[in-house]
Amino acid sequence: MKKYKIATLGCRTNQYESSAYTDQLKALGYLEAEQNEEADLCIVNTCTVTGSADKRSFASIKKILKNHPNSRVMVTGCLAEHAQAEIEKISERVEVVPNHDKEKLIERTFPNLENLPEFSIKNFEAHTRAFVKIQDGCNSYCSYCVIPFVRGRSRSKKVDEILKEIEGLVENGYKEIVLTGINIGDFDGGIPENPVRLYELVKLVDEIEGLKRIRISSIDPDEVDEPLLQAVANGKKTCPSMHIVLQSGSNAILNRMRRKYSKQDFFHTIDRLRAVSSDFTFTTDLIVGFPGESERDFEESLEVLNRVQFAKVHLFPYSDRPKTRASRMKNKVPKALIEKRRLKIMDLAQKNAYQLRERFLGLESKVLLENEDSARPGFIRGHTENFLTVSVPQKKLRSNDIVTARLEKNERDGFLGTLI
Image 1 (cartoon, rainbow, N blue to C red):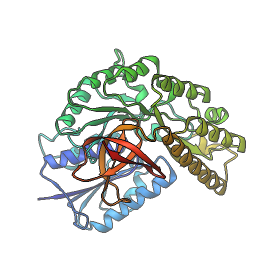
Image 2: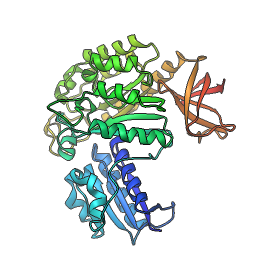
Image 3: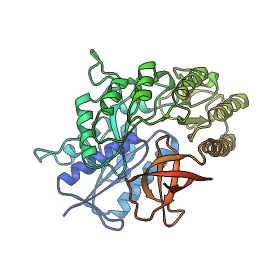
């Protein structure tokens, strides 16, 4: 049996695409290589959202080449789109598939094979939560972001294809679906002249028999319109948690970033969702050290963190990306100051997450179990419907079980719970 190895960096969309490669290769008779086993085919799915992502992507390519000296190595993803020549210089063994062709990677790898399996997922690398890509590309051209250059214009998957894919995942045992994409607020069902909007898709997914939970991945605050809010509020399976992108708490910086919303718009969206359910929690993205970020701008971001109390903050130190407006801006923030601000935000975000969890201490909640808790032998971890982390005694429990737990102890990394 031939073996494969896939290295995935970056976003949930990349994770989805790598899962599609996995399903395609397994359908062709390939098996995943063990940790110290050489593969016949290696795929590196790269990321370029930050400078550190570039470094990790290049390091991953070199590691694959070293550990699999006789394998065929395919490199795709966002870095492959704008740094193809640089990647090809690493080794003559590297074959680059630009990002705009990544859904045809297996077709390009095996050009002489007929009836190749379609690019979709039947399984996901996690055994409980599956990310389903409903949209790709972006039309926004925020001043700091290279994604529109490497993924192209916004385009959506057709609704019937999405529903078929989710139904297949549910049949294979998946209980939670995360609708994901590069900018899912742009979703139009693949028919721009007669669009199917995101709220309509959520309602259709909510009707799929056997599915237990639906989450909406990263979305901008101005894209949570009233129909989407109502679809989430009234859904039978929609979870009271959402990843709503902030990027900065300063309107001046948001304007320089060319974001479409203000801090007040962000608060308005948070308040509307919390009015639906007091249990609603939020995660977000934040950039620290954007060009021209003053101490007051930074303090405004801290103020937003204190007001919202996010369950988790994904923090990105600013780094120049090629072709972007921000890379040409003056008043760059010194790296040492960016690092100082990063550490301050991470400390505050952790304290706020702890305080958020205090509101739920002693309550009972349903937990979808995911994996063993490496820090606590004999415990297994999972998430509540509103995305709070809980560890419970494992006993005979397994990944993908849904249990009811009392949230007994609030610790640094989440709750310890007792089974009800």
